Length: 385
Image (cartoon, rainbow, N blue to C red):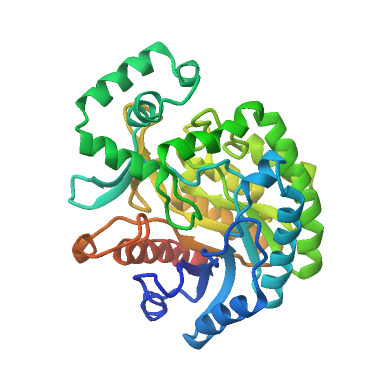
């Protein structure tokens, strides 16, 4: 696996020079200022490409070309947005990008309830607390019909969690969930968020899956023709939230998409943290099963807590996922297929003086540097034995 690093562009506190010192050789980035439904202009792609090349690095992965809500709901200018997505795909291919990562999660990207959860060793991690999330849904957002999605026991725990929060706690929780996370294009107010959720009241998982398949039936042949591979990111967390359907949470979800669109350019972003947040996902087995169709990997680890729907981000080699077994399965897949693919250390703890600096949630320099070093060490041992 080739060692890559996510970079958020010129405003990223972690510079291209920093990334090069970390030992990564490839860059994962996007034109994050481009809204969903717009064509990425060649001059902007070439400018970004030139910056990366000048630093002695390679832009190998776009993460992500945003799939607009119009495409997922089939409302408004969805056909025009789909055409724009296809043209953006062609344009990044002209710049030499090999992989386009995307997701099909409605409305919200990856979701946490705490961006600075202190671990016993003093590191700060990302955390998803299911009771806090239910409290937000039921008592802060007050989503219509939210009660139907939570059983009585969960509602009681959520009520207690909400009662224990100060007003500033509730404000921070709201900001954490809906005010926009790295790589997302929109932030919401509570009213706007409820409005964004409304179109999905009539969209179930079966309908959303059909739309995903139809979308990739169009895009995968275009990607193959342009010399690019598509890589879908799994749901994070990997379960329905806020009444929204999720269609990339378990092995059967991935298998359904790969079987429906067998074009080899249609593949997976194997995110061990997202899939690993569910105990019924066997990550080493999934890596072996999907190895030839894994085009990109996010390597991170999570630790499920006493309530298995609550988890926090652990160190890369210290969580519920056997990372050594996963990496071995991926290296075996590379040997079988005769091709390599990029991976990046995903997320990272805030360590040392990163705790006093401005960092993007999940993307501090030192925590990812430690993660990349640990993953690199595993790869070196496995490749030599």
